[in-house]
Length: 356
Image 1: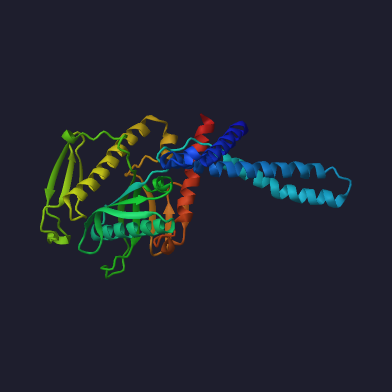
Image 2: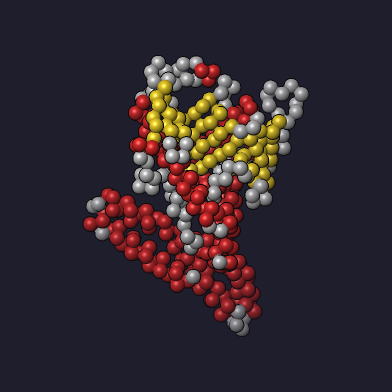
């Protein structure tokens, strides 16, 4: 492992030098590629340099343990008690950093939220989830844009698709795919009974054009008039778009824009992402069960989380984590939850690599 880390550090230095090369600096596209690769190694190099520094300090402290002065030996003992756990933690961190990267981690995503069982209450929960993810995205300076929305009369969504753009969006969001269950007393409930509803969340990496082969002959395009809740006309022209991918039967609609062209362009992006997700799921099914869990299969049948409002409790069933701060999380304070999921699945992936 340490030889590999030395190579990573050397490559990082070479990339840094290359960025200062006038030929590279003068070519925006080339410079961006080098800068992106260098940025991807920065955390690993910083952890490795920190590891080497602490390892040297431990070596010095162990030498001091042989000193004739009792006070110096005591000081060295204290230093070792602080430094050795730090070194252990850094070694684990470096093992995770050296794991093969998911090629989708740096991509933007399409976030798809669908109301499931629970009627109006499920549609309201879909709106709550969209708001939660939007506010979390804002804390990370990500850009959120609604692509398609099927609103309900009560202010919720039967289905909503948003595009989220920024740094490492898929890496942070990929473990959100699955069934999200909510337990709370609906506003319309006069007896104060707790109802259980559910929504499905799918996180799909944005597909590059080269990754998905969309043939025009395979796509049926229908234009129709946009409508709002209850079928009320909100547009006097046939600007809404429905795309049907004939080979798979996948259907995508978009009516957010007033222009046919813009709606079709958005719908094509969503269709490409869905097809890419289908192909990725097929690939995941071919690898080991452990690895499939780590990279996130997006299995929508899996209940991943319960949001219990009366108890202010949120439980992630996959990692066995319960937090009593649902009020803050539903407002977008998701960092602890997202980080815990990432740490858990990285540890499982590391276990799988070590057992292989």
